[in-house]
Length: 89
Image (tube, rainbow, N blue to C red; front, top):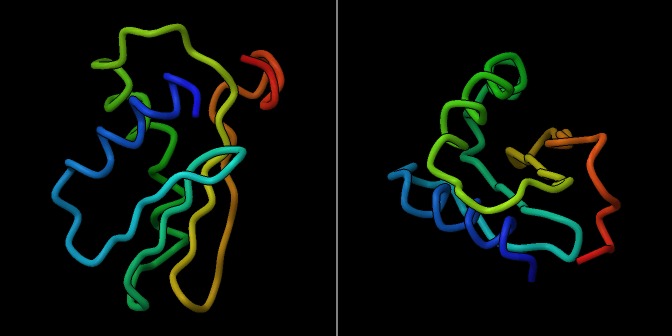
């Protein structure tokens, strides 16, 4: 697992999000939210939310794919899409 991915996992797993299951995937991070979670709202506020949370990350940034799911719907979000490939260290 890459250090950048580990830092994000640490931040999200310690963010006190009741009912959210956050775990690593080969290419990123999987986030399972409660069924009542509005994915459109999450998708709309995600860039600003991740930007605010990333202020505490002091390792080099890299491309990271987030997989969001609420039991009914899902979407993916790529953080730092122009950075190096997901499979490089």
